[in-house]
Length: 478
Image 1 (cartoon, rainbow, N blue to C red):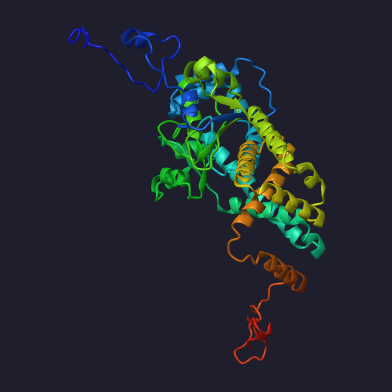
Image 2: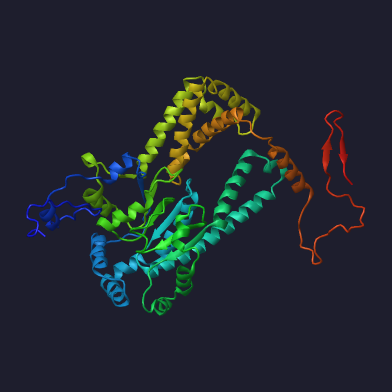
């Protein structure tokens, strides 16, 4: 082409920047004339920021060069049967360390807790070392998922049998609401294995004590296809287990978390990070949860591909987000104090007490008008709530729980005063439920079925109340 067009200008567009040490592309096309990097896309709001959490298991790897050794071997090997065997032979003890059963159990248990504790319940990918490990992780996560569901159901059952006065306590009702929300996610979430097919894979997995056949059938036969289901934010398929598929050229904007348990570096690592940085309503940021300790590789990859102007890192440690939340809480607290509302005084009053209710009412009176004042307060509260949700489930979120809850209560009360909405019967329904709980016990299952009232019975059916506004009398049908 150079000979045919000796005076032509050669211009290249690439999403895969030059790799250090490979200068051939630069020789042909020359230096960069324009770079659009990760950091610029975040500033343009074309993508969301990414935050990094290192949750590497406590298992210590004594070889300081382990990650580099793994990278070289994995990148040099293909994942057909012969090369998988070669990979395991060459990695030897190092491969064994990463795939130890007790280590995978620890990761699976932590992953379940982390997934359920997130505020924004976006979809998530679990990236494992190879096909067999991805299948093992799928099975282990399902086991811990079932155990967590059983534990939640057990605690809800225990709370339901508390004495009535204890059940009515605000903290008990709040705990019940949290558990019911957790149970809804546990009961509705679907998960799937997503790996490429291979020759003799059923026999190979069976030799490892694994059954991939139902997963392969599901990957082949699912309607709608699993890829479409994962991309659909309303579909309950929320958690997928991969090792290579879907890490490039696949976008699911509602995916907010990548659980990384595989040594990855350079451009493949950047592609993996990008699975969590797509813009989606309600999604403040994406989170990379690192179980494989790829921090050093992440820093190298970002230096090559992702650093913004001035070397700014587009992937931030979760501690930076905690500091943003701390600053936002301080600003909201100072704003309220400047208008006569001391949030600490409200928090110090017992939950559900008349004193606290009165303090909330007084605070709302102080913040609800004029309009600019109310708008500014709601802006502060919205920022705090968004950052708090993004920080969870980091343990640092506990520091701010009381203050965030107080701000949310004031904002909710302001909105309810401005928009009363339809009649609320939740309080009376709660009272009816308490009365039924106190009056009826279900101890056994009747072999002959429920005690239905026969058509000729004179037993009174459920009352249907109708009120005459003028006489205020109640008549019962039946």
